[in-house]
Length: 270
Ligand SMILES: NC(=O)c1ccc[n+]([C@@H]2O[C@H](COP(=O)([O-])OP(=O)(O)OC[C@H]3O[C@@H](n4cnc5c(N)ncnc54)[C@H](O)[C@@H]3O)[C@@H](O)[C@H]2O)c1
Image (cartoon, rainbow, N blue to C red; front, side):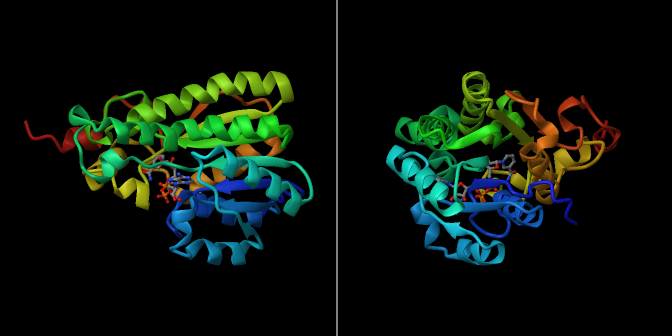
């Protein structure tokens, strides 16, 4: 269903790897709502080729960029403005990767080179994106940048590993840069803290199925799906949320404010 919420808006969407990716769903919804955008992902992700299907379905061009490389990001913003015919109105940062998680290295045993990579890819990349767009003045006034995060930034989930630290940094960058970007250019920066979702990044976390089911039973509304996350992103890109910035917005069916649910209590045998 389209409400034309993004009619005339231009954007850049990071992180659509395959049809399960949250960024994939956001791209489909943004297209439905009338936006034009470019798609980007790390050059290694291009090999899988799925992103070209999404590009075809949404009439978009794909521009490879490693989000940890400033020159790639500069080229990305410059090419996007050329392709789209002007500055952009929204950016989705949907990027996460931890080599420590990938290699099942325990948090207490962390490999510090990997730890650096986790923070660079999953958090500092947002700073790089914002710095690049600000330097190039590539985002229109009242434009909206959204990054995806997880509640492990606030609460301990033992197997979320160093991604928890990356998410805490991501949310801090959102506030700090959001202040400066708001003051300088009236650009908004927010994170959406999403329920566990079955994607490549999500399922890579040890014990993901347990995580998923626990959160589903805790949340009064159940887990939020990737599709509903896409809807929320669209509302954040639209003009209906113009005064929202520097926030971490929970999109989790009520999980974040629930102490314990009856479902969980019923499952505990005394
Ligand atoms: N799946 C979940 O349970 C869940 C929950 C809350 C938040 N999130 C967050 O949502 C975001 C999207 O993840 P997803 O679940 O859709 O999984 P996904 O695996 O589909 O997306 C992660 C993306 O990051 C990209 N990426 C990795 N390294 C990169 C680099 N150097 N440069 C550019 N891109 C790079 C990958 O290619 C991939 O497209 C992530 O930030 C993730 O932490 C996911």
